[in-house]
Image (cartoon, rainbow, N blue to C red):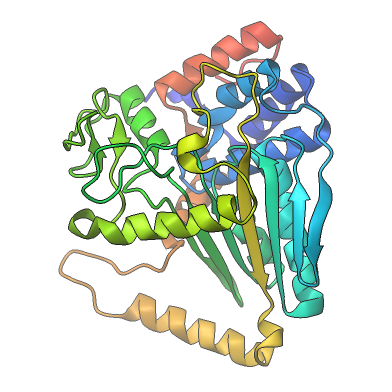
Length: 351
């Protein structure tokens, strides 16, 4: 890729915030959306990184998303809260939800916060990691509009319905799981279209449910698990129940498509966060020792020939270190979209 398209993370952060401000989004929206996107880009989750900026701006300008939302508590008891995100960008309500989950977990040992009237929140790991940074175990769930067939199914049923868990590790980066319950996220298909790259085998289907490697033909995704995709479909159901049924929000097949054409109607998406306080279960020193031993034995365990064993998050932390140092190379479609935004909004070009 052309050298001139390599950009520092700090420059991308500044450009995103300036773009949100230019279209009238409040500071809280600019901060939350930028933090979530930069989490994705920094850790190499490019499908949920800064390439989403033009989409989010379109949703804010069209009225789908509230440019100045007021997030408020509308329910709950004890260690449980329910927040109404006021049709905010998904990051606004979900960062607040995890913040409250951690606060509740300090008092009760755990905190569970559900979010109503939200929207696409980007990488689920952006929120779980906030709990881990505070010394807690964080869980994040969300559903989304239907892209994923059931096992042996031939229609879009679940969304990509991510599940994320982050666990603190004393003296090390957190153990971090951030997975779609589909074989790949749909944004990955769009990224491969931009790059002109074939999809891996068995991750996407055409309109009849027949597997395809052509990202231009791909219409729906397979559930994670390949021949055992019923497991991935069931995990998607877990995310669906916690983030949609439990919040009273729309099920995946009832959510308006992320890609439009309607960018004026709020989508009614829910989310669910959970924080666990290890101190409520055992002595912190014992927890830390257990996690250190688990991670050490995992990483030092025998690997197959030519392979390397990694803990969840190891690849992402390695990419983050590289991108902190070297910046990011934008894919062609994102680079062009940013040039167009610069011209339209009167911003200094980022590439």
